[in-house]
Image (cartoon, rainbow, N blue to C red; front, side, top):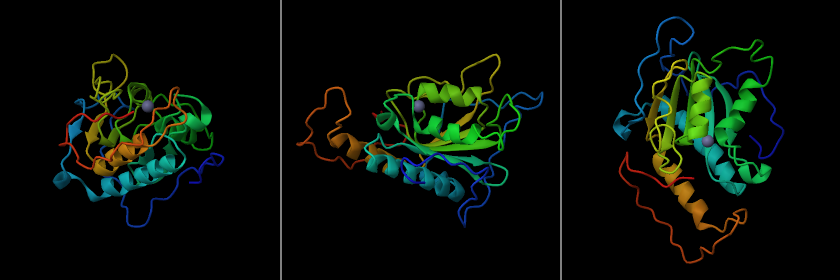
Amino acid sequence: MATGSPLAHAAAIPAPPGIPPSTCTPTAASGNTPPPAATAATAAPSSSQHEQDLAYIALALAQAREAFAANEVPVGCVFVQNADGAVLARGRNRTNELRNATRHAELEALDRLLAPTAASPLPRPYPLQGITLYVTVEPCIMCSSALRQLGISRVVYGCSNARFGGCGGVWDVNSIDHPIHPAYEALEGYGREEAILLLRRFYMTENTNAPAPRSKARRVLKTDIPPLGAAVQAP
Ligand SMILES: [Zn+2]
């Protein structure tokens, strides 16, 4: 998707060739059946990761690379319909461009997903039911809460976010008890290495949008990847 282009939206963008529909199990949020219990997040080692999930996280990483090229914190995401594997929306950070610290990748994509009345003709309590979010970095507390209030079924992400994460990094927003909104499953570790390296490369550069830019000319890119489940200093 073009950087900074108008947020044109099709009802459903076909999945790229070779990506089968997701086999994720939608929650039962629409009926009277209680949703399944969810833990904060499950770290998924490479050996247990499904090919289709990796294909979708690759699309999210492409969005993160686009953010990097636009001098934004490199986080990207896609929303995928579980039933048929359609990519419903893509997004990346635009906080610098819009001078709005809430314009995270997830909320950018949600605007594209939910605003068109053709895609959602009637308001629904949980419009993200039956949908999986693939995002390169653990959603922050704000986004984790928004996703829960909208009934997301599942979140698959790259690296944890030790400073702001809402799926266990800082707080278990996805799984803590709540009288109304169903919990959702969160899986960590998909595309994790590239997600971490993108963040490191970004923070090595001069962030001219920071309130007090610091010189980082002497910094050296670290290429070691901490073990899965270890805290990562993400934005
Ligand atoms: Zn966020």
